Length: 184
Image 1 (cartoon, rainbow, N blue to C red):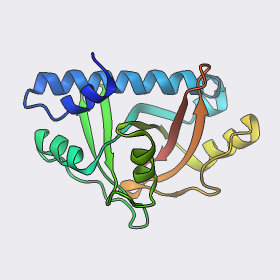
Image 2 (cartoon, rainbow, N blue to C red):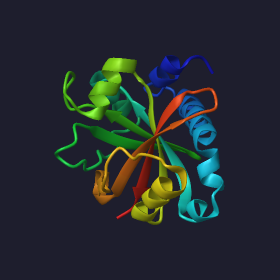
Image 3 (cartoon, one colour):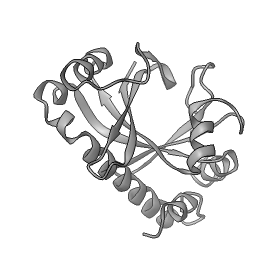
């Protein structure tokens, strides 16, 4: 599969097979990045016991790309994002590939997605790990691994979830934002 930007563009293809291939490639790339960055954490028995499957890869795109992908995929339902968060999102599921397509509500805004798009352009913005208890997972990260989470407390996420985030590094020093998600 060609470069990241081509794969993102293919999510809006008229051809379902092209969309499926692009979604699979993006999912695998995101999972490989996150796996490399969180291997030690996920091998910890207490943390691993909190992890649920499947993983979701978050792809940040510009608003026009967001609408094009959404339209090409049958207008999936928009997630209910808390009003204080500058984001819009919807999910795509192609077999095992699970993607959250994310955008800002307004370019130039101060939210995390707008800042990511401004700094990096479209790309893999985050990888979401579903957990049984986000507060306990956060506590383990802080106490056992000295990981600093983005927020001091768990906060509301899309569709009534509870979330927190942390930045992890791969052995090659690539950064990945990991979102811990507890379903409502």
